[in-house]
Image (cartoon, rainbow, N blue to C red):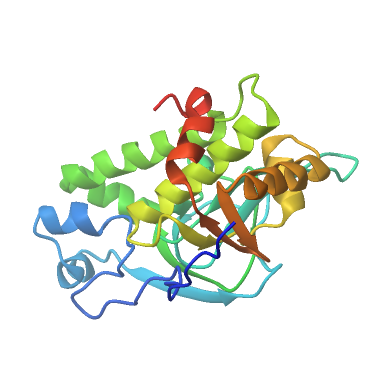
Length: 249
């Protein structure tokens, strides 16, 4: 197999904006700007965005059962959410990339129903949920965006719940990652797998050995190239085809 040409990789992290500009991956910027709200106007409404972090790898952002008061958008890094059972066994619920929100699943209970931990260096934008809810009553676009993000969150949780093969699950996971990075302006064909093979396997309800075996098979067939944690989609069309039954698109 011929070597894949190396091009500079764009780091998946947002810029910080300024007094008027939102961060480049802000989950609410388009909805606010479309309705005439820049950072200055949000400040006048006491809708303050708090930059928090950096969180180091392995550091918890919140833990299951803690009171819920804010949602947070990932500015840089990757966040894993998970729960543990009484015997200490972990179940991975999801991974969150720059521009995505964590904490949406706590809205109904007023407490976080899971744990959130940094997988690498993570920075967040923290939004007071009562303030965002108030803004949503004034700005219909914010309300629509919240509904869309809630829908996406539910979709991620149910994406891999069917009776699919290990190859179908893993290729769907990779295609979904590619689409999520592309939607936020990053490379769709070259990115880091910041999560461990064990975490990926746990999330996909597979054995870690199975994930490693399928990755090797995909690499041997020329669909992907893996160098440590860096993943290159060398044949995106073929990958999409392998995942078609899961993604249905």
